[in-house]
Length: 188
Image (cartoon, rainbow, N blue to C red; front, side, top):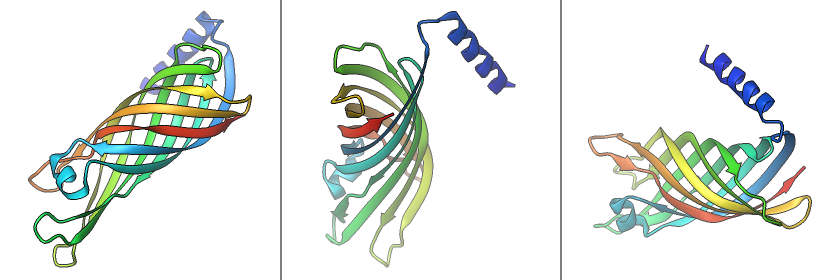
């Protein structure tokens, strides 16, 4: 029933705002980001942050409003604090979100957005400890800008704040933090 109300509300908004014409633009892109987890234990074992790679699809449903799907991969390597043995953390976020472009200034199109998703993680430890893995949900808020290079090619400059945490044991693990980077893609 909530889905029907949501769809009905969306149809009413589109009918009431004729300037928000159907856009039908599909965007596909890849990104290179720097991800800093908001976790003091992470900083001790893995350092301040590391690179995160991603791919995204976006569909501009109505002018200036884009629905998005993303998948990213983050895998820093570190050392245990006492024994200095090698360890590795893998995080795989799968995200659904929305972006609203509030202005088109020539080639620049700044936006704000948000979304939610699933964050699967695995920490590979020395054999005697066993690995730790799990999955949790999280949300994010973002701001950025598209830079149109041509009618088909664009850059996406982005900063994102992520809130995600899990409690696999008695201690809460914070997987959220700050991510910023640049992406490139095609729009059709």
